[in-house]
Amino acid sequence: DTGVSQDPRHKITKRGQNVTFRCDPISEHNRLYWYRQTLGQGPEFLTYFQNEAQLEKSRLLSDRFSAERPKGSFSTLEIQRTEQGDSAMYLCASSQSPETGGLFFGSGTQLSVL
Amino acid sequence: GENVEQHPSTLSVQEGDSAVIKCTYSDSASNYFPWYKQELGKRPQLIIDIRSNVGEKKDQRIAVTLNKTAKHFSLHITETQPEDSAVYFCAASIAGNTPLVFGKGTRLSVIA
Image (cartoon, rainbow over all chains, first blue to last red; front, top):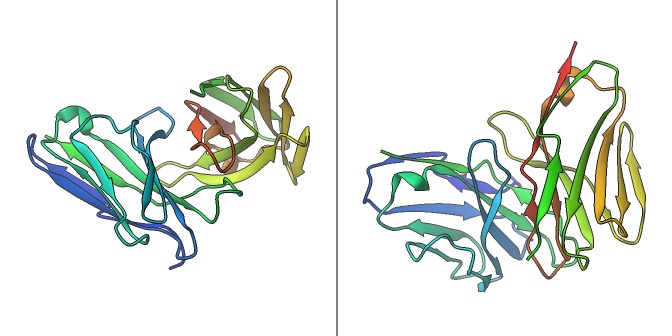
């Protein structure tokens, strides 16, 4: 599969638990983005990487959110001490180079916090 | 930072009619404007994009226009078909420098 893949597709957790999501970008893409999407809204930017460098993280929703891309390939997004308001679709996207701008999205991880 | 407004939020058209979705942006430095289509339960997919050095771009039944002076851009779908029914998102960025900022989406329903 040459597209962006995300795992898991669905995650149900209890409030207060930690969760981690994984994203594997298109192999030749050096930029990787995390977005959050709630029902009826557009994707909301969270953070992004160029190779292993995190270029912007001020939009992460709180200090409970963190992301890594340690080897410049796959990335993980962790949410600690989950809250019901964290329930959303978490989308990963990648792009081939800084100049193109076009993003290719994964299918997302749907998080439900009970 | 950039702010993107999108209108209308819902749009219903008869099959064969045209549909127009409009977006405005706030950052005059933005120079890249893509449109994404998201079908129910699926990922957003890029359908067309335009850069600030052109005013219009067309791909079969889909066209996008850009007015940099007014800071707005529009998506035009002609001869709509039921499979065009989806949520459409506009977005804006400074290509290579800032991440895409999305509008809230337009739910298009094409009635057969």
